[in-house]
Length: 245
Ligand code: PGA
Image (cartoon, rainbow, N blue to C red; front, side):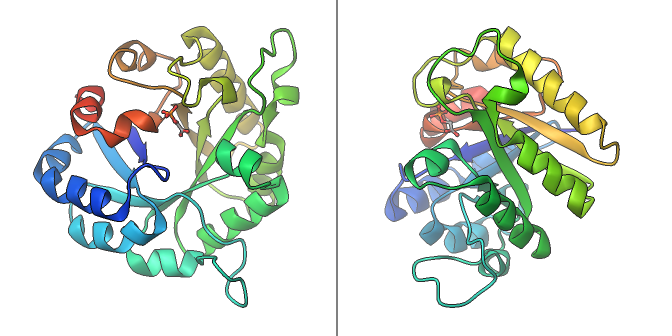
């Protein structure tokens, strides 16, 4: 399976910057996304349609950063999963730690979003992680990994066969310091085992939190790791290129 490099541009790239990045580096990005590497770019809502058009029929996939938890209706400011699908969006991040802490997203809301995405053939990238920027040493993982239990219940209910799970501990996001490789490996192993009990669902496991060009090579060696969710470092092409190549 190719290693996934998911660029989460957050709100760091304005519309003109996103377009300029994508047009300037179109060929290089396409060359990078091949054989053993797959690149998924997640720009903000307004840049999704032009980027999906730009990378149509290429090896680059486009992902959303969020979607509505409802199908359609009077939900001012929201964007439906159906609209995302119509724009050519193939993946969508849900339940990012920033959405959970800054916008009050609950596990119920996140599972509703997953349902909307699945109904529209978009693959959810569900973020799970330790919710607070503190050490949880000694505590059982299930008590500190936000989101995992509701998402496991959702998978069981819907009999989903595959899903992407991104483990992102809060202390590592945007801090410049990734979690240590050993703890990432333990958590990924734990998540994988939890999924095994459901047998029919094999999760694709990502790590996110301060992945950059200096730490990506050693982080990549972590057992059970299938890819990275990359924030800051994905907004600079040279840095992103070093991580992927
Ligand atoms: P970061 O963000 O790479 O800037 O730490 C990762 C994320 O929040 O997805």
